[in-house]
Image (cartoon, rainbow, N blue to C red; front, side):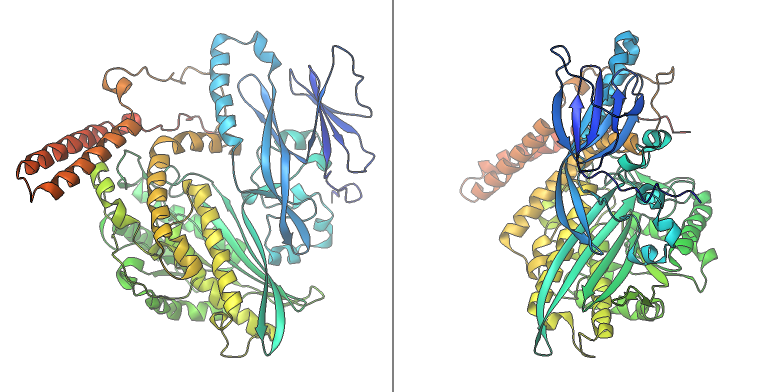
Length: 638
């Protein structure tokens, strides 16, 4: 059994010395340890006992850093990634948790001086992707505890495993910098190997009155995900059954010496399918290799059962249109492997809950209550002894695994009036523009499931601890209810920002229980933002994600086709300008129509402006596949 050297701790504060030909990272947290030297030409590393002497020629820049994320090798150079700013955002099971506020990329690319022009060109393109990666949000780390494991899995770790370095204890699928740490691992630099996760950790202390006494609870919402990607550029599963944007959400409450935890998961439908971004608001769904669906689904659920026990899969998508085809394929793929340990439930959220009948979520809860009762949750006493354990997991999905899934995992059933725009298969660009107002009025259809289940389980936990009476609910405590709503609303925003680039829709409803004018305007803005990001920036962002995660290797080869030169319409077409022209045309169309009752000539101008708008939209739609920035990375990592 290989052990960490006396359970060697990670360095918590370091000093970065930037010399002309090398970087030196010096621990400054009080530990008398060797410094790490990295050559800026070939990225070679070694430990040194003293900082190199400075001279008038070797004047170093000095900066405080808080951890080394890893190193990435491109075509000719390597790039060291370090944390330059951090913020303590709370604690996880008593250990401080930090959020990465700023990253810095340090190039070790002096070897480019002797590289070929082709290598320099490709290196420059990929280095540009690292600039995108530098802005990655939702990164967290701890120097003391393993953030990749749930409370239950941490509790189950043996004493010997707990003596290993944190990176050795980590669950690789949730380790954001797993690939980037490989070089440091090869050099046996355990005290520098800082595990980083991407997700959200929200720590809220809540005071509320019950049984005439003041109570305090620490409520933590905690999630991690793997196979990261952007909203429409990462769908379905890979041939090994790993699904896109798999998220594990853990809700922890610490109170009266007890620790209660409940884990849920979400992820894309586990077979091969995709959406090709083409400027429509909702591109068509394409099922890839449908004959492979049963095998891929079987591998996915086998992996889930090994890690979580029994699985209840809840499918929230529509039964009609393109979503219906996906749902049918999901149901048929999972049918042969259903058993006592694997259940599948389809719940057409939009059809059953309709426009306003969100109280009908109780129909779903009635169908899954027996599973939740049987498989339970984790409960530890004040000595850390396990009184109860979670034996299974609920897996939810909608199309994006965002809004509908969020709601299902935590929120109470409520009703509110307002028009609802149902989803369609293939909205063209013009229809998307015309329907945006209805789109943002869809209330909370897409947010209601995770939160419903999480709320129910929290009530069960508080009753088990002895805080709640048999019939007492979260809703009966105003402060607890409000804080809980805000916690899950922030959770939904964090997931959505990392996945779609904007906060979740209907956040005002989640927080306040009603729609507000400001909230509607925010949704309108976010809907526009999602459309723009999906089509014009997420492709590059997906490239950067794949590069960091090691899903692709970087090389110069004959099959690397250089970007094609655009000409004609492609050279002059520009989406923001086209979008402004269409919007302006629609504005004048509506303005002319409003004046038609006074002068019939305005009908002619209305038709003229409408025709111009439709024509521009049709041109943009026809060339959508040209304008969208698709990922250029194509060489899989071996």
